[in-house]
Length: 480
Image (tube, rainbow, N blue to C red; front, side):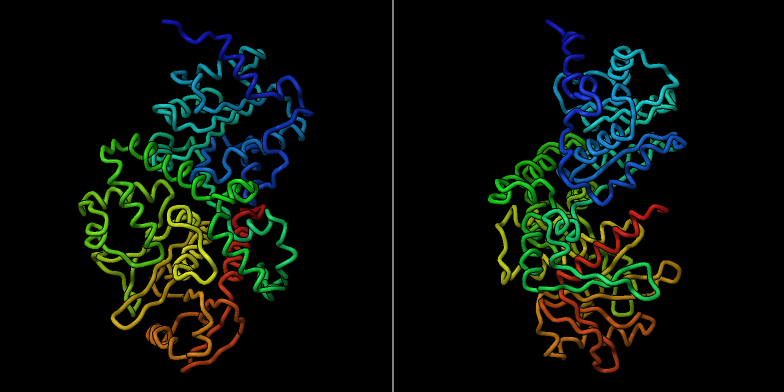
């Protein structure tokens, strides 16, 4: 049986690294697409030679990890880095199957006679396709401290767990979430047209308003349907049928290939049924008993599958607290949110602006913006007579500091009785910061007094934009 010749592997490496021949003037894949807001901090980490670690860029499928790698290649070339000092390898490419990272690096070094103390930039894309990748990568970091290693991968569970166990002190994990609504508007070129901003007094953040709430809402609905994925934003073909793209190329690959291979799942259809049930109920409260009946999956199995789906960045579980902001010892009920609201539209069809599911998808989108702040843990409050959608507990004393109620309706503004539940929660927890935010469909009002509680109404689309923009301003600041 013939083995793949070294010459064929080298030929493929040259094909994947056109800058070796063309230098700084080479055409780099995706170089003309907009850069994610995360790019500057990501790239600064790459060029920080004092950091003797590999960078592991994780995240869901198709949200721009490979694109960000090629943007870094372009930035390195533009900064004067020798084109022969940059290696890009996609380990998903069949010709590299069975090769070790050390072997691929050895071919690269041999081509250009690189020394151990040279400064090289090595990008391993889709590294989860290499068995025991973390052991090999750790060895390279130890053996070549002057080389800058960057790895990307979509199988977040394996990447995170194994990097923590086997790469302690050798890896820096960097998570890239789906697009925020703010990034979506920037990508389609309508941010300046629809948004006005003003520096908030006594704050590093901005206050935002919209020039046209109806147009902003129209774009928000598009964002819910396909806007979490950069490719969908730029491709008319994908936008015309986002379900086929998102389901087949993103959801199915994770459910049918990534998770079964990582965890030895035999009944793939069982996992698929559970995820479909969760996706349909995004933004709603669920429990193990109900999920078991709806999906036909045993409760013990559901517990494991929930961990797998959350680790793979498909869902986010949110714990419940009671009206006194106390957590439950046994979490019988919880909410599940898709990490990207566009996944629901892919499975069950695109939403119109007046669809019944808009409320749950709006809530899902709000939680999706919060993914970009890794330091915060959110809860929801529910008791026999009421519920509050989002509550933040102070880490030190576990007392609620602020709360938000998410609506895709203007009704609570005029029917104030619908605010009674939130009044009850605030009066039981007087340390909550006021005003209490309530999102609406179109209404903005900074100060609404009702039963001694101050409310602020803000359109849900504008709140989603403000949330994403301010969080990104913080996490991408130069000193972060």
